[in-house]
Length: 251
Image (cartoon, rainbow, N blue to C red; front, side, top):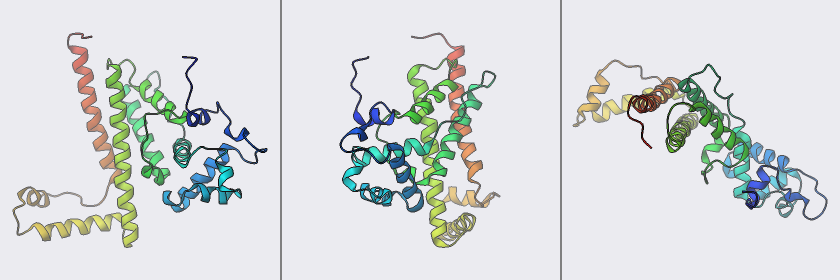
């Protein structure tokens, strides 16, 4: 494996290559470039991030920025990896897999909510940058000793992280829409149910009629809804683990 030639963007992310050593003496660091991109995205949203805008904020020419990062796509990848930050502490020796994985999933959601712009950056591949790899490692650590096969452990991590990303996108989109309307999320939710009741009252919507007839809290409880969905995902994983443990061994 020693003769593997890493792509430049990956080598830069891991500090294995210094692109800024090219040309005249450098005045910045890759960390400064990435941090500035994050600041712009957090303050004004992802569409505001461009190589020219980041260069302007740093007081350098756009062309000089390419000495530090090859492309805007690479810059965005580095921004996400840095902004996501390190994962929560790994599974403790006395901690069950389920509690550890739930905590890991919660950490994903917290990171995405902390930097809302990240949800708009398309996933370009499996985890390869430093923080991404640490998250991957700790997710695998949570599943050690469960009896799940390698592909099943990977799929479980993708399931939980995908759920966190989906939940973050939906909840943040709705919160931003509510803010634009000048209402709270609770007010938007209550208005939705009232409108739905009016629109479906004369039509053939028996399941919706049944739902609206039942007593339930129409106010928004996003954290409770998140945990309900997460627990149901983990129920399925736990059932697989128990079935695997009680069934005949297979290759």
